[in-house]
Structures are given as structure tokens and as C-alpha cells.
Length: 291
Ligand code: NAP
Image (cartoon, rainbow, N blue to C red; front, side, top):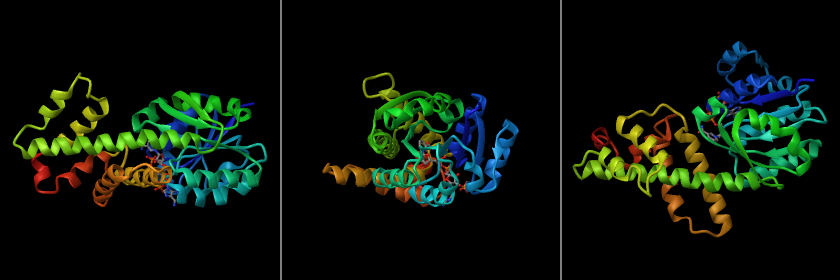
């Protein structure tokens, strides 16, 4: 029998993931708070549900890909009572360590399986089925969710068995992603203010040991002013706050992430743009126009 997968949240990430699940032959249902973002998925043979409870009824796997912990908690409060006893909840939104523990408890109280499965990768990998899934679940659940991860990702890393193990690696990796993006903005801004063409900074690191494909990508976006959201600033600022909380809990000095969080938050107030727009906080107008 075809496995039924429900995706709750069809934003930048969830829409691509749902389409790849449908392409892989799953029977896919989606729900999104703003129905206009979910409706186009019907053209891919995906069922669009009216509310979270209707969406999860009869689902084998329920995948949450919502903005933050509050959104997941709110949506699952409506969906959990409608989940069947054999359903498995795959939680892929980035929600942090404390919220992951709370969600695992909610699933246990309902008697269903819970898989902590944040992902690495942005819009394009989500659309291409090339995400990296950082998963954690008891060994007995792995076989059930592996085909789902194979459909949305290029690679699954089983980090551990405890809920939160996946998020530990996700927050560690995102600390690097957010820091390198903010540091790239700093060098682009500095080059511009010192009278250089900022492209020269990207050229001088290109191909060497301190180069990074991400710095090149986001750096080019900063120079050209292309801020179409792939990893949106509001999400980056939210993740920086989750990382700060993990850093403090782990007893690691938080000054670097504190600065990164401040820059991302300041830029996020400008709206739902890509994280590359952090350049606006690093180099406030009108100077950023010449960067
Ligand atoms: P997004 O495009 O902003 O989509 C967010 C989704 O959450 C939308 O479906 C939105 O519904 C929904 N939502 C927000 N608040 C809600 C609420 N109170 N109740 C119900 N639904 C709510 O974000 P995204 O980029 O797809 O990210 C989704 C998750 O993946 C986030 O946790 C993010 O940190 C994580 N992630 C993102 C990336 C990336 O590069 N984009 C990479 C890895 C992980 P509406 O459409 O109605 O607003």
C-alpha cells in the first residue's frame, strides 16, 4: 500500500519537499496556514487539506516544516489528536533544543513515534531533493522514515537516538553558516568603504584555503543587491537566537554569536529578504548602495 505522507507548512522549504515526496511515489497531502501557498501543489497530484486535523487523518508520516517552535506547537495541537496510533511525526523545522524535547514529549503522550530531523540546505536543494537530513530517532523508527528522507534529501546523517541529537548538529552547522555570512558582509562592506571594488575580496579568496562556496554565493548577492529569499533573514535571526541559547547552555562564550544575532536581527526588521541582506545592517544606507 502507498505510504501516506502529510506535510504541514508549504513555505520555501516545505513546498519543494512535498513535491519531491509526490515525485517519489508517496501519497502526499499538504496544509498551509495561507492557503494560496498550498493550492499550486494540487497540480503535482498533491491533496491540499483545509485544516491540520484533516491533513493528518490517515497519514503514516506527518512532516512539520513550519517557521518556528510556536508555529509547530500551535499546528500540532490541532493535528496530534487526529493522528492515527501508528503515525510517525518527523519534525524538520528548526526549533532548537528545548522545544524539540517538549515536542518529543507531546508525541510520546499521544503514543506516536517522533523523529528529530532538521535539514541543511536552502530553497534550491529543497526543490531538487538534495537536502541533508540530520536525523535522530530510536533505531526501530529508522526504516519507516528512511524512504521519506531519501525523497527529500541527497544524504541522511543519523546523528543519534535521542530527540535533539539532530538539532545539536543542525545548530552547530548553522552557527557556522550565519557567522560566515555575517563575516562576508563585513569584508564586502570594508572593501567598499576602503575604496576597493568589493568583488576583489571575493576574487582574492577564490580557490584558496579560506574560500567557501557559500561566501562566494552570498557575497555576490550582497554586491548585486539580489536579496530574493532562499534563507530568509527572519529565519536566520530566529536560528541565531536558538544557537545563542544552546551556546549559553553548553557554557561556550557567546560574544561572537551575540554579535551575529544583533546584525541579523537589525537587518531582519527590513522584511522577509534573504540573509545576504545582512549587509544593510553592517553598512547602513546610503553607504550600502555603493558596496
Ligand atoms: P517560510 O518560507 O517562511 O515558511 C514558513 C512556514 O511556516 C509557512 O508555511 C508559514 O505559513 C508557516 N507559519 C509560520 N507561522 C505560523 C503559525 N503561527 N501557524 C501556522 N503556520 C505558520 O520558511 P522556510 O524557509 O520554508 O523554513 C521552514 C523551516 O525550515 C524553518 O524552521 C527554518 O528555520 C527551516 N529551514 C529553512 C531553511 C532555508 O534556507 N529556508 C534551511 C533549513 C531549515 P504562511 O505561509 O501562512 O506564512
